[in-house]
Image (cartoon, rainbow over all chains, first blue to last red; front, side, top):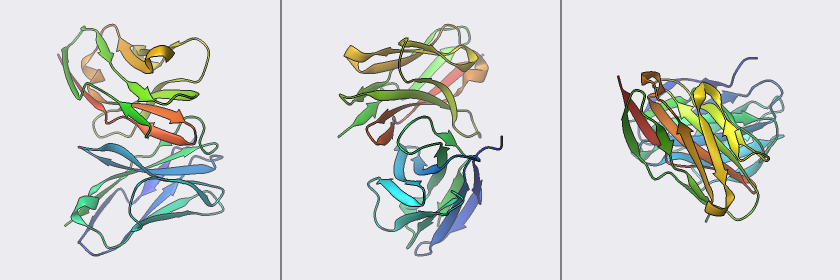
Length: 113
Length: 111
């Protein structure tokens, strides 16, 4: 089966801009979660969506938002970008929310200049 | 707050050496435990998982991990590492309605 796909794979933006990242889960998976990966912080949980509803949210400012569509695809938006937002953004899908393993996508490398 | 601790941030081993990476978590209830690996330039892959039953779980590529409930630990082991095991290793805990990751351990295996 096809894995989790994320687009775009690489992105360069400048401070103050906004960005939208996309994630398509594994077919049949209804839960999508997002993580920010940086060298010093490891993987930090952003939020999780299930059946188009946000189920959990990490400790990130309101500039970070997301949504999930009826086909389980998810988008993540970051507004008013800051230099510190430069990171690898990982999307993971799972069959259900809260339980079980996550299958990860390759990530989107965001660089903010 | 719940947390996952990986005490070894960077480990360097020679080929054929034995590996043990520590993982401790802080959560008193039922947990599901995972080890993920991220090879250079690749995405996170599941190495092994523990949900219930035998606390010694075997994963892919010769890795195994032991869940010790009394110590809140889930250490990863491999008897003999190879150069191809060079990667970043992440411990993860599914506790309550959250999924927590450790900060990762970078393993470098010298041929």
